[in-house]
Image 1 (cartoon, rainbow, N blue to C red):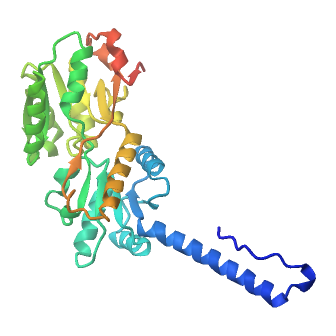
Image 2 (cartoon, rainbow, N blue to C red; image 1 turned 180 degrees about the vertical axis):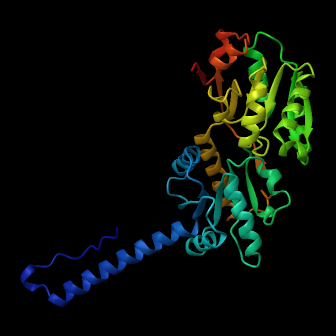
Length: 346
């Protein structure tokens, strides 16, 4: 607040008009100060687009804690009914320097925004907590104006942990993938090879995805490759509810090996899918997002040097479902559980 230092004057000699003028001037200066303060935040504001979700709230909290008012944050909740026009209205009203896109639905809305309002200067964006964001954006409108953080933890991170706590060797690990994701498979195969782990990938055809019975047969075929474990990627198409209920769950009910997953929900005992889950720390994802925003702020929001670049998560959480492990008769070194963040026994 601006304070005006007025000279000391005896009350009986004060000119009434002088007092009024001084008060008006003080109020004007305070108003101008508040106005410019508002503009300072708005000039460096970011528009967060996200569905209502506990994990996204954790990312937002981590991001806001790090930014601490240095960059204004406008939080917009979206859902399946949100129209591109309403998102465009938010952009027009807020005039953000950049956008933060949490989750794949937000990423989809952004690409539609770029496509529909191609002639206008839609702000660049940071994608976070979106599955295969780099692959999704590879051929989408506005791809050169997006950077971000990958949501997938490389398979080798979880497999090395699994190997450490397992009494049996982990040398051959099976996985399913869709056409177009060969690059991801190659990267993970290379990383695993460095640790002496062989990744056994099997492509899933479109026809297999549409019919759960065919998908289940494919899982059985994959399991016949002398596997020591199975890795399930965060592919929502391969994990759509019908496939989970009619293929994954029935197959895994008879599978007696470890299953590594990349999302927390898939290690729940009620699903009986993964017994080890390795996924990003969502609060730290927010901190990492803030670091990218500070970097871009220093570059005056010029995304050219970060265009199409996606960082790996800096921090992960490792959860083991001990109940599922025991049901599958998987021998574990409990003395090594200290390297895990949580052990679920229910």
